Image (cartoon, rainbow, N blue to C red):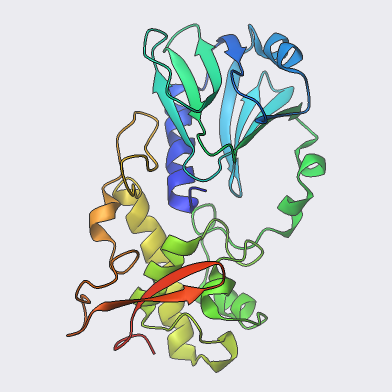
Length: 277
């Protein structure tokens, strides 16, 4: 699924492009995407309503509907949310089409069918998503001090990469940004929090904040021709600033040796063997 910078960029795009717009109609062409009401009931509930706000709760994108309901989008792997015109060809995997009275359409394209869409009462989000009560620190939503970061970190067991990807510690950090953060901090993926010095905790904290905000600054990361894009369809420019993720075999930016790829859980991790300790 998209990671924190990409989701926050989409939220900002939606705030600019969709808030205060009226919904003409909503269509769910695919199957398995919609949770809750039937397609017919979903379409009837949205027709003629106004989008009043665009929020993000953890990794959920949340659109306010007339201040009475919330349209909750959870984007799966390779899913994208794009603006389109009604005359534009429908991409394979399009699972949701919201036609606005002004500004064309919002389309959720989900070829791997890992996304969900829900319509819930405005006061029922926490009940529908109890995991929100256990969310960790959000590097975009709130300023985080290094001492608070360190206190939370030192309560964690396990390898650093897994800790960074735990949503009860940090919101929205996945395989890509965890590798980038650890490279910038100069720390191996398999270190444990208990082995870190105060200086290393500071480095890790700084790497989290700077990596997330640099990715936001450069418009997120797009990997491959079917990777994440902004609402406009524009790919992210942070891709060219990636240092280690999926760059195995290339020379490390900090050493005379290649980036290494190693098995981690059900996937892989990428790091500089010489400078991450």
